[in-house]
Length: 95
Image (cartoon, rainbow, N blue to C red; front, side, top):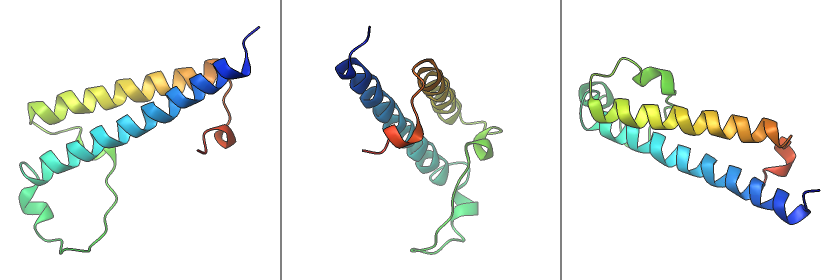
């Protein structure tokens, strides 16, 4: 039988994966903002708010973006798998 300590470790791992995925995605946006998407993003002014979606970078020709995109998707897949295998509910993921 798995202990509560074990479950808490799994939940901490899920929270870490979520944070890492978000940091990697932020770097994808930063690389694109200084490269392929520079002209598009130049129309935004400081303080403007825009939510990016991972699908917006699918057609990027930048090898760095593609590799980080692949990493993001792998992290998401592992996250989803651990979430399901351990039947972790959303309420358990709130720090």
